Length: 294
Image (cartoon, rainbow, N blue to C red; front, side):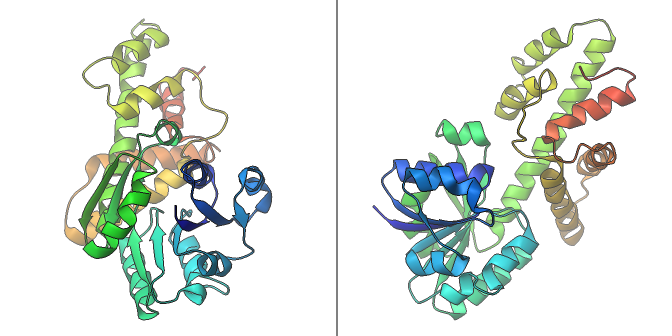
């Protein structure tokens, strides 16, 4: 059993800690808002008052943060990860952020004798709870071999994709496909509905058809009833779409469907739906189609 740390106890991070505790690991955690972590403290997670204290208490520290700015603050800010890094310590960042920023922070961690890998995940809350999460890892091969058993405690598929930053590239490529699929699914449902087919029937047929990817199967029903708590909200998904568009510009890959889907996410924000799950693009399209989403 390992002595672990975890920084960022949001929707996904908190459930990962819960899973690590279930596996028998010792976990020291930090979150900007302590109250959100109380249920984990009640389960036995140790509390730290700063990212630095987490890193100092653990041999291997995970993080799951909102965006590149949040990661930079947690790593390089006062009382941050870099202040606690010492030779032999490993930092695993599971956030979806800029590959370039992640590489730069990895260099700074190594300069202090530690190691860092980027390890974003593919999956959702339900995927994690079912033990079906997949993890992509970017970093040195020897570091990957050290952290792989811990990552397998979170999900059955752990893949080393290359050097630092490349796991983030893979995650960005994955997430742009999620949003594009959700928009295409919404188009199909609404086309069927406006032609006279009940929405419930259209959703049932499509989710069990050849287009029924795992994401469509678990998120498609959201067009019938949106979850009270967003699994992955509009702002978070648009952050990833913008990362994809910027990466596409850098490597000269046109991303036409990503661009179109990004505009629908902007429309969702304009309608005051930024905090809803990104499946809310269905409602945006429904309004444009002249029908309500309910």
